[in-house]
Structures are given as C-alpha cells and as structure tokens.
Length: 209
Image 1 (spheres, rainbow, N blue to C red):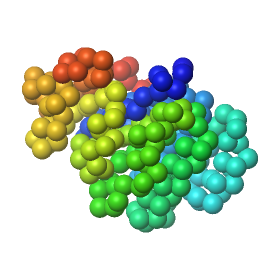
Image 2 (cartoon, rainbow, N blue to C red):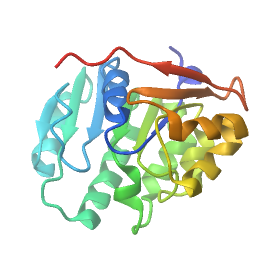
Image 3 (tube, rainbow, N blue to C red):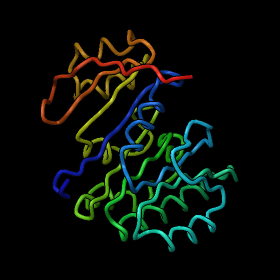
Image 4 (cartoon, rainbow, N blue to C red):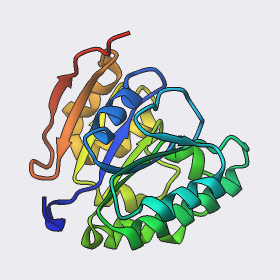
C-alpha cells in the first residue's frame, strides 16, 4: 500500500456495542502499530504492554525500524499527563513513519483538554509519512472537528443520543441516522468517502469467548 492509499478511520458507538472489538480487528492487520488504551481496559492483547511511558520510549528507540505492536496503558490516571504523552507518541509516529496509531476513547481523553498539536499534524500531514489513525469514541464530539472531517472510513455502532446522531447525519443521511438507535450489538453502519451520503449495514462474526 502506497502512502497515497493511507486513510484515517473513526469508530463511534456506545459502551458495549462492539466498537472496541472492531478496533482490535483493524489494528491487528498492521505489522507496526501503537495503541493508546486510554481507560486501561483488558480488551487489547495484540502487542507488548506498557504502563510506564519511559519504558515504552526505551523500547521504541530499540525497535522503531522493525515490526512492532505497542500498547500503552496510562495507569497513572492523570488525563492531562496522558494528553502530553499522546502528544509525544504522535511525534514519534510522524518521525518514524509507516505506522498505525489507535486512540481509544478520544472523547474522554481530549474532551476538556487541548487536542495535541502533533495529533493535528498527523491528521493533516501524517499520510505523507505513511501514518494512519484509528480513532475510537463514544461521542461524535469532544475531540475537535478536524479528525472527523479527514476520515475516509467510519464504523458507526449503536448510538441513541440525538445530539451525536445529528452530527452523523451529514455522513450517512437522514435515513441512516434513524437506524443508529436500532442497531444490535456488533452491528454497525459502514461509511466510506467514496460513497458519500450512503452506507452499508454490517455485522462481524461474534468474538470467540
């Protein structure tokens, strides 16, 4: 895949609807990836886990030229500190190139904080460096409109909050927006920029327990 084919993706949905499972399936297709597990959930197990940012950086410096799957769990619970660390990770990703960055619960991470400048840089210029972003959020707001406007694929799971549905109407049309509160677990509307205003309803195979 050339850098011109790199895309940003967004995954929306309420808690427990299947959005994290979808994020896992996408990120596991990459040989070089960084996952920011914002709430330190146990769902992510596709790579090497770090809860200490300094240890993560040491590992990065040794492996950034090779294949790697890094999962960062900011267990210190300080959202402002996590934002600062994410800013560094975005800088690493841009310099390194050819990497996928998954950010879980973007709205929780950025809602009351300034979206890091390096994150915005990745949104607008990361593709030239082969960087793809996968953003996961319960809400359609809280992390600025820039990322949403640059995404070329969206996976939209069950949403019942009217304010969030209204934001998505521009992507999937009024008919698609009406279907969002009716979606079952693991069922989602798939949208791509190649077919604006339209969507497909899909449901992945349920995960093996």
